[in-house]
Structure formats: C-alpha cells, structure tokens
Length: 145
Image (cartoon, rainbow, N blue to C red; front, side):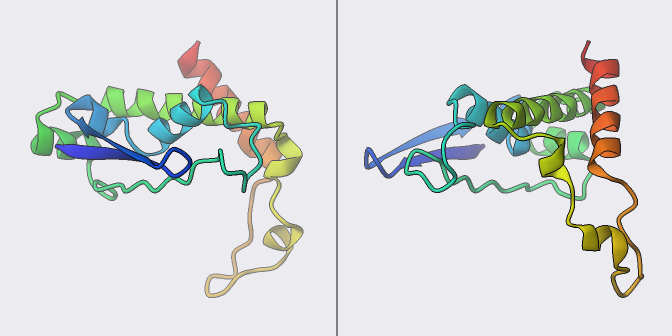
C-alpha cells in the first residue's frame, strides 16, 4: 500500500488516498503530467498560488520495475505496461508543454553545453533540441497511433 496525499494550502485541507496495484505503477511523472493537464495548470504562472508544488518519490529506481512492483504489490504489471505508461507519460508531458506555450526553442540547452567540454570526461552535448524532439515524435507516432 502506498499513500497519495493532496495538501491544499488555499483551502487548508488534506486528503489521503491509498494506492494499490497498478495505481502504484502510474505514480511519478505519469501521474504528475496527467494531473497537471486535467487541472489545466499549463497556463498558470509558475509562482501563482494555484500552481501545485509536487513531491514525488520513486521507490523502484534502478530496478526491474515491473518485477519489483509485482513482487511488492502483486499488481500483474508487465514490461509492456511499463513501456506503454512511459510512452503515455511522454505524450502527456508534450501536451502539457504545448498547452503552456512552450516550443522547441524553449527546449534548447544553453550554448556552453554544446561548446564547452565538461570534466571529468570532457564530453559535450551531442544533440540539439530539434533532433531530440523529432526522435520523440517519431517514437510516439510509431507506438501511440
């Protein structure tokens, strides 16, 4: 069992909800992106009182996620489910960015990431935002159509 806690400072309220099975696998970035889209937060100013502050913990980082969930919660989660929720998370995040008015230019890293080698490996960024976004669109088109 995991708990989802919503603390609303404006209403001075706290609501708790227990998460079970697949709901646990749908936490993290997927739940955050879905919640922000459903609440139409994309157009809210970052520091406005209506904008939620979200803390999310990932207990299965670095593990075989589907096996870890099934071992802990007997949820019947498959690797396909994990892949599909990852794709849906990317789709939700892209929809949020579109609704917020972000475009490809906003995704571009500062030039020093592309120009200045970073120690200790002396590597630089290899991809521009256009290439990354095109690859993501191709991935989503191939799997979400």
